[in-house]
Image 1 (cartoon, rainbow, N blue to C red):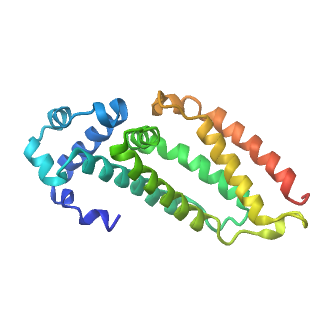
Image 2: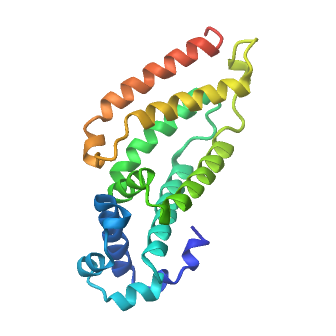
Image 3: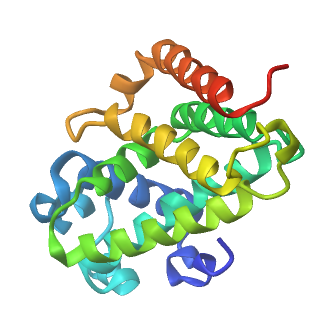
Length: 213
């Protein structure tokens, strides 16, 4: 976040800035990059077009900034709230999944925008979004997959391959539940089902790869 805070948008008064960013994310989430116009953003955010372009220059720059800002905001909370002292890697991954669900309630506009960006196909921004997404996945995995208790695994298990299977399973489940038509309220209604099903997957993985308790 420190790098992002050097952006000149942070010289704008806090309330006006938060309104602008929230409005822009909501418009992009609802209509996609191409169909969203800067005119509708400035109209609802109640700022001038000149001011918007003073801060961002182009619609593309605005979109990319929002994507970086959204993910950085989420990850700040993520790293504070996740328990990295939990050395059972399956329990840690379960907590990561559930924490993501909880943060959707705290940052609905942000998660709507990030989810829509996942499906964005316009080449003007999709390439950069994909680049940043891969980097965030890499950073999160490096941080979250350290210092786990390998003694929990069965003796003949390749722990590196097991970790990949864990990640493929949980990420695959998460992506299978996503839809470009869904908004945060759609996901919120399914919270208990998501939690139940992720626990079922965790149980299967624990049985397959861990020693008997």
